[in-house]
Length: 233
Image 1 (tube, rainbow, N blue to C red):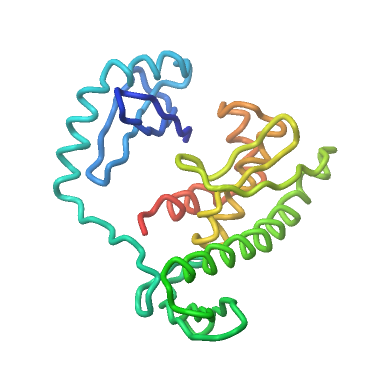
Image 2 (tube, rainbow, N blue to C red):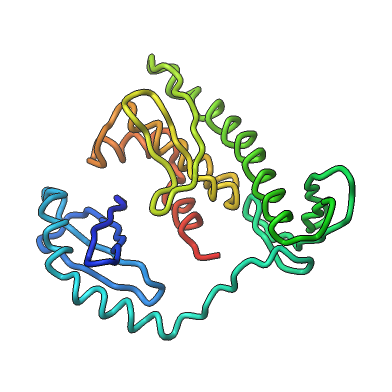
C-alpha cells in the first residue's frame, strides 16, 4: 500500500494506492474519509496521480458528503478526566500540583505533575513526555528490527522523530529513518511494522514486488499489523 497526496485548490487529497492483478484503475471514497486507488501493477505513479487529479472534484464531493455524518473528534483540553493514547492503550488524564513536573503512566492513568493546572502547561509536559517515550521505544524497535538487515550487510540508519501529517515514517538515501511522533500512541507491533517497512527501503527503493517479498520475509504478519495501525482511534 502506497500513500500519496495531491493539491486541489486549497485542499489536500490524501489517498492510498493498492496494486494488484487487475486490468482497470478504480478510485474508492470510503465513509471514514479515506481514499483508495486500486490499480494494476504496471501502472505508473504518474498515471495514477493524473487520474486522481482528474477526479478531484468528484472525490471532494464525496468526502464532503461523508463528512456530514462523521462525529467530530473533541479537541484535547488537557484537563483531568479526558483520555489519551499511549502504546495502543487509553489512559485517563489526572493532574496534580507538584514542584517536580513529570508524567507517570500507572493503572490506566496518565498522572501529570505540574506547578499549576494551566492546560497549556499540561500540554507541554505531556508533549515532552511523549517525545521522550518515542525516543525510547523507537530506538529499541530500530535496534531490534535492524538485526535482520545487519546480516545483509547494511549499515544501521540514524533515527529522527518529528510530527508528520500524511506518513507514519520515511527513509532517506542519506541513511535516516524518520518516524512520526504520533506513532507512540499506537501498539508496539505497529511501531515495529513501520520501522521494518522503512528499513526495507534500504534494499528496495520502490513499492514493487521485490519490496513486498522482502517485507514478507522480515515481517510475515505485516498485513494484520498494518490494519491495526490504520484503524481509527
